[in-house]
Length: 168
Image 1 (cartoon, one colour):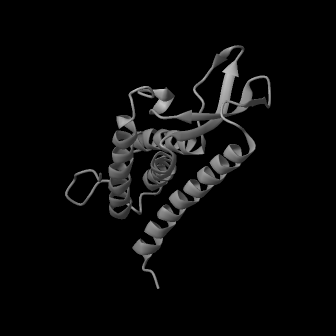
Image 2 (image 1 turned 90 degrees about the horizontal axis):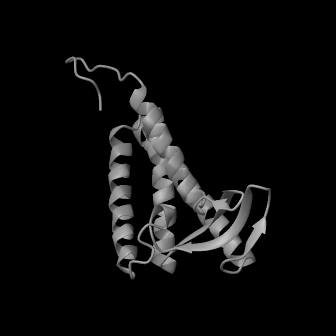
């Protein structure tokens, strides 16, 4: 039976794993129903499109020649290990851990793509008239939600320790 701390850590890791599963299932669906570059209009401002991103956010370094795959994979791996360490250390801090679980799920989802395909599968395309935002996916959304939650958490007053210092 898990103690309270192990149960909390399992909960945060479970949320991250759920996000990885949702991300990978959505990418599998779009990849099996669309051909590369195909786009279907859903609304006047949103399309589904199958895109491959060999770079980082907003396709940064996508034309760098291939080395970026391993750089971004290494960054995602190191970040994931660090996030798991933070989750273990701060597992009772709900908002902080919720944010980390979202970022972890997104990082691992995109890491899987980079390792398996050499690119990240993107398919959510928002636009205004002919001006398109960079296509993205569930993992990217999770990372951005996690970042927003971390920002929100940073504005919350942290409890003081017995010695007068602030936690984290």
